[in-house]
Length: 239
Image (cartoon, rainbow, N blue to C red):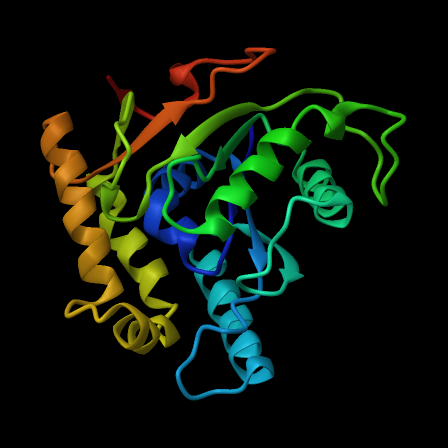
C-alpha cells in the first residue's frame, strides 16, 4: 500500500503518527510525508529564510529514518488558507502519493494551520481522483481511506482505535528529535518546561495505557462518503 500523512508544519507528523508510519515502512509499504508549511516563523532568533531552510533539512533527515518520501508544499507558516491554490497543491500531493490510506489533522486541533490543513486534505481527497479536476498531475484511480491523527498532547481528542508503537517508539522519538530547532521555539512561545520529545512521550504513554501497551498512537476514522476501508488498514491496531 501507499501511505500518506499530511501535516501542517515540520514535526507535526512525527508528534502524532510517526510510530504508525514506521510500522508501515517495516512491513514494506511506501510511506509519504507531506508538509504544508515551511515553518518559517518557528524561531526566536533566525530569519524567516534561515529557519525555513533549517526546518526543511530537519524534515528531510526525519523522513530518511524510515525511507519516507517528502512532499514539501512550502506555504508560509501561520498563513495557510483554504483557497484554490492551496487546494490544488494538496490535490497534487495526494496525486503524487496515490495513497490507500491518509492521516490528517482533525477539526478539534488547537492550531488554525492544523485545522485548515486537515480540512483541505479532507476536501481534496475526492477531487484528486476526478479526471477533469486539472492540476499539474494526472488524477488517481482510487479514493484513499482517511484517519484523523491525534491532537498535540491529546487535548480534545478521543481515539477510536490504537496502534501499538512500543517496538518502534525509539524510532518515533529519534525522528522527532531531528527537529531540534523546535525545542527553543516551543519554550519561547508556549513557555513549555519540557522538550517536544517529552511532550510526545507523555501522550504516547497515555494512549498506551488506554490500549494496554507501553506506547500507542490514537486515531479516529473520518466517517465520510465513500467509505473505502476500515480500521483493519492500521498496522496491528487495537480497539
